[in-house]
Image (cartoon, rainbow, N blue to C red):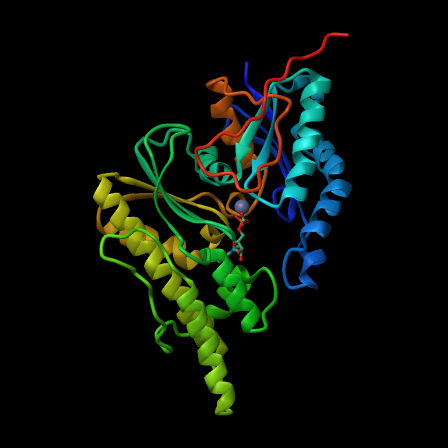
Length: 349
Ligand code: KG4
Ligand code: ZN
């Protein structure tokens, strides 16, 4: 008998539901993107995101079940992202998941969004061998994580200012490209020369596995500003390519350093920025030179989705790490911590 988990993900601007069997068989993965709604504001408007989740979630859940060919009665658990993220957005998913778990008398599983990103790797490769190093690069996080076993996370380094995805988004806005910036920069960079414009790379103190991208972002802004003052034409494709290369170089160098230092031979890549082809290929190539393996999830599992949440939830299900029905949204939830409030006892009528 397989374990069928319905997972919901509403931490930011994607309303998503998925059904995954045994943490690896993706029966459905429905993502309703709100990008077009937020695009006109140049970024995610939290209140608008919550309202959109409310409108969309029931339909997305229905579609996820339909595509999986299952009914509510075929489910074994309900999982949901309860942090980190936008509080109003998270609350929509958490409330819906609690309602479903209570109504269907199913166990509830609370998943950390970053943990979900990491587990996108296990959705395709369930037999990955521990210990592992994972580079998590998203709109809100840039973390280098050491995993000794399932559910165990030691953060070796993190960004001290902007997350990698945030830097992509801000630089894209400065270049007038729109939102979300990552894919737009990537497209423009494809037409440019990454070596044409020299940009800084912040390696910080020797041995540090932390990151910093705000200096690089400022360097791009200053470059554009100076050119504007001198009425010089800027080759935007070269600038985008130089920026993307500078981000990839630091991410790749520090990830390999983390693996070598900890004696780990397998590296995982996770989060929205993991969809970046330059990062994927550079990391794979450079790690290969050191005989390190790199696992990269398929593009659809890199950006926000609920299949990754169902996958992370499956390993919690096996550990019986269930959440109480008092589960609340925790916008600042840290990787590795569980913040379940109180105990809940089912009332029998
Ligand atoms: O993981 P994600 O979907 O949401 C968060 O949890 O933040 O990541 C979104 C971030 C955005 O900053 C977006 O610009 C970036 O991932 N991103 C990319 C690419 N696709 C998405 N960055 C670089 N290259 C891409 N192809
Ligand atoms: Zn995410």
